[in-house]
Picture 1 (tube, rainbow, N blue to C red):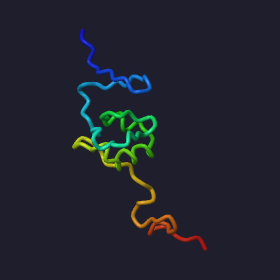
Picture 2 (picture 1 turned 90 degrees about the vertical axis):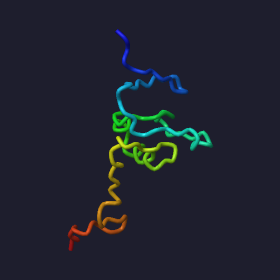
Picture 3 (picture 1 turned 180 degrees about the vertical axis):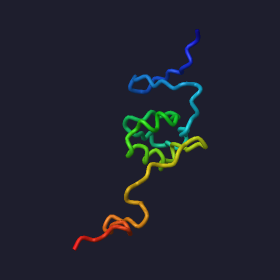
Length: 101
């Protein structure tokens, strides 16, 4: 029986298992990485939605904002940033919040 997974080694030697049937959510574009930058803990490779979802929220936001990772049609919405909720700013509570007197 053939193995249905594709094993890729990272520069650090860790093995990243990607199922061939899993659609890519964020495509890695090495041509946009001219300085050799990386996000610690994130492979310099395309990511499935499952791989992306397992990452901490701060890395998800970084990937979604990075030109090195291009969202595909299967990618879900970017993680919600609490500071960008409707009416919220770092110095002002949300519009429907009541101020304590």
